[in-house]
Amino acid sequence: MAESQDITRKIGDRLLSLTVTDNAGIQSDTVEIRLDDKHHELILPRTGAELEVSLGYKESGVERMGLYVVDEIDILGPSDVMVIRGKAANMNKGLKEPKTRTWQKPGKTPARITLKEILDSIAGEHHLTPKLSDEFGTIDYEVVNQTHEHDLNLLTRLGAKVGAVAKPASGFLLFVKKGEAKTASGALLPPIFLTPKEVTHWRVSLVERGAYASVKAKYRDHAQSKEMEVATGDEKPAYIIRKLFKDEAEASKAARAQLENFERGKSTVSLQLPGNPLFMAEAPLHLSGFREGVNGAWVIETATHTFNSEGYSVSLDGTVKK
Figure 1 (spheres, rainbow, N blue to C red):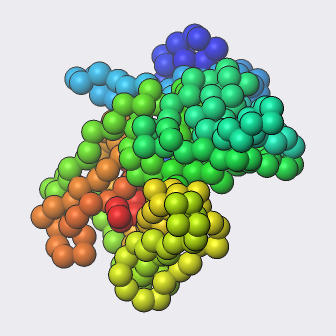
Figure 2 (figure 1 turned 180 degrees about the horizontal axis):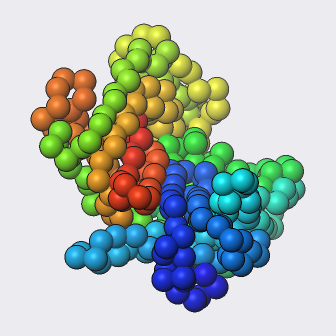
């Protein structure tokens, strides 16, 4: 669909390839369309035009892959190829405009501002619907400073401290646990189960563990009027978070998130297989029947869907799930 008009038949005999890349986290999802521009009969699309892309099979139906905004057009010669590139429409420019402001409760009371209130406010400013995982609903702050920082970076910074990821998607502004695998509406993504028979090629890179085997965090015990320490992991070396947290629960959550960050992404998997439009970034991936080191739980970081003269295929890149 281009500007709400179905152009499938119009470009069908000129389509060289269509690639949709679905990324985890704040990195924008993208689309690339390569067309045969022989005789220069193609009409140049305007930058800013909206493209709605769906993929699938005649027998089982198609799935909507997203809404994209054209931001770049290449014209190649002498091969006479037009390349149209777009980014996800939900990555609106306002989310990446630097701002300077302070987030705190108004008035002189010592009330704390919650993460939910910050997310709700930012989502409202950008006409998005906020979606916050329940486990982050109690997080609050005395004050949060946003200094020449765009809203998405602020949410990403707050998320990194608790093992969460912030991302706009299809009209929603998500703030969910990293690897939790939720759709734009907040529903859990179904896990993907694969065996060697279903995969065309695969590669797994196993590397050394992170530099730290445990994480310690401190908090203020107001009842005893002293600093206390919590630890996640029981091996050395230990990483110590310098920030003093308000209570044991907040310190424990931060320690767990930091340890997961150290461990996540050290081993990687890449798979190529026949296309499936339901395979999405951040979905849990379970491999079985391969061998030790390959079998187990992973998280998809990038799903690249490609349709060309050879058919429909998908490439999955992921990291080990912790």
